[in-house]
View 1 (cartoon, rainbow over the protein chains, first blue to last red):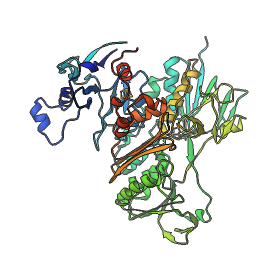
View 2 (view 1 turned 90 degrees about the vertical axis):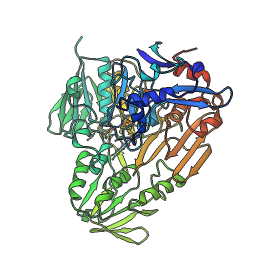
View 3 (view 1 turned 30 degrees about the vertical axis):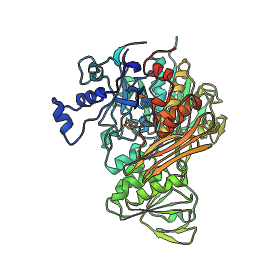
View 4 (view 1 turned 120 degrees about the vertical axis):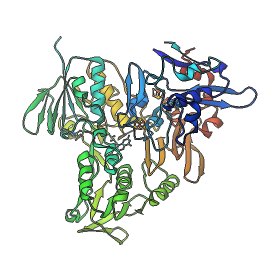
Amino acid sequence: MKRVYVNEEWCLGCHLCEYYCAFQNSGESDMVKAFGRDEKPVSRIRVEDVDGEDGIHFAVSCRHCDDPQCVKGCITGALSIKDGVISVNEDKCIGCCTCVLSCPYGAIVIDEGKAIKKCDLCVKNGNGEPACVANCPNRAIVFEERG
Amino acid sequence: MRLLNYVIIGNSAAAVGGIEGLRSVDKEGKITVISDEPYHTYSRPLISYWLEGKVKDSNIYYRDKDFYDKNKCETIFGRTVVSIDKNAKQVILDDNTSVSYDRLLVSTGSEPFIPSISGLESVSQKYSFMTFDSAKEVKAALKKPQRVLIMGAGLIGLKAAEAIADKVSSLTIVDLADRILPSILTADAARIVQKHIEAHGAKFILSQSVKEFRGNTAVLSGGDTVDFDILITAVGVRPNTELISDAGGKVARGIVTNKAQMTSIKNVYAAGDCTVSHDVSSGSDKILALLPNAYKQGEVAGINMAGGKAVYENAIPMNAIGFFGLHMITAGSYEGKTHIKKSGSQYKCIYYSDDVLKGYILIGDVSNAGIYTNMIRERIPLKTVDKKLMFESPRLMAMPFAYRREKLGGIKQ
Ligand SMILES: Cc1cc2nc3c(=O)[nH]c(=O)nc-3n(C[C@H](O)[C@H](O)[C@H](O)COP(=O)(O)OP(=O)(O)OC[C@H]3O[C@@H](n4cnc5c(N)ncnc54)[C@H](O)[C@@H]3O)c2cc1C
Ligand code: SF4
Ligand code: SF4
């Protein structure tokens, strides 16, 4: 299955993937509008940084695990697997954070008072390639089969 | 080959894990699900959200409406299994009918423990808080605001408290322990959460038990009295193990199984709150009455029942819960050295030994907590991580480069 893979050495730490993810999932057609509104759009990918000269940066998003701890542990049944893609039913999720407790990678994003957010590889709103990958300027994240 | 006949007792998290585990291996065998509760499988933790009005009726269910159809399950709901006849390989129901099995899964969960307190029978309105039905009863009783007394400041008692806080005229919670949530919080951590809950109108009476009820008055061990209209008991749960012990199977507080979730009785498996688990963070056997644990044990049982191979390992106590918007996540065992940081209602305590992370308590900011959970479950050697970075906050940056390359880059060395 195609997944988002990280080429850590190539990551510039520009955080563009976060912006594009948040925008893609905002339901807005205009970036200025998306980021200008009161309810800020939330990114499903997060970049970890250590600043300084030989700083390290890399993006983290859902691995779509074969043995997904988040799905198995979800106390409401809001998380499910379809064709290998793990997504959340936002109408059902109560934001209890059991999936945050369970995910080994920190790939679940808390959206205070609302359903959690997680990467669904843009299957619902994308055009084949996840928005983060499409907009990474340095191919530090790619969408491909790596077994 | 003849189709196998699978029977599952119970219809909650462990049973659903069992069904999904079975069907991942055997698509055709016959599955019969028997439960004394008359409902489509629902999420037990959601009963408090439902009572609070945050979850609508149609969202309390743990799986979609077509779940049994899709998984080709027959259901017998509203019937209790009264015994297992292991020689005839049958379960006997309360209407004297029997159902035959080739493999049986006992996922009977737990039931509320009701303490014997003198005068308890004189309380006119008393409820427990474990089932959808009990939540419905509490809802009906609270049509108009009344004075509520909750016995037990554990997870279930406090979830009930949160659900009804704005529907009551007064809310008192009494517990014998010296702090709230004693099973998951230390005294320090508990104080923070207690203060937060008190701000929403609940009153706590700790280090005291109810000695006696005189009608709708509770007499406490310290001598004080509390008047109330409605009593909710949430002092603990006890595992439903009788079916197994009556059939001669091994029980040690909970049903004893091997790593494949098989009981000491041939062809009989068990999973969920009715079993004992091996906690790898403390190295001891205990009952882990938690939904993720129940599901995963059920799944392992199902796979093995159908002839596949799976083992349940790396279990630890782990809990994510929140009250009135304050999150907390706890996991593992609280032993060894500590790293503590607190400010206001934010709190963090990490427990560790020279080698590994043992446990943690996070209150407030719980982001990415699973990175810690994983370190405990997988016993990742502390010497391979950047301890300072990792203790500051859970992050993959503190893991070795090779770990990230494998997990994020998909490249195994
Ligand atoms: C209010 C509340 C909040 C909770 N919140 C959380 C939470 O936030 N996180 C978490 O991890 N866990 C939580 N839990 C615990 C969680 O609900 C349990 O761990 C989980 O439901 C266990 O699943 P189970 O399948 O083992 O058993 P159960 O859910 O107890 O189900 C067992 C079923 O078997 C039926 N049964 C028993 N005996 C028989 C018989 N002889 N014949 C027929 N049927 C029988 C029972 O009626 C029941 O339907 C909460 C529990 C409650 C009550
Ligand atoms: S959220 Fe975490 S546990 Fe769940 S599939 Fe993604 S990476 Fe795996
Ligand atoms: S936060 Fe939502 S998706 Fe995560 S475990 Fe709770 S209900 Fe499931």
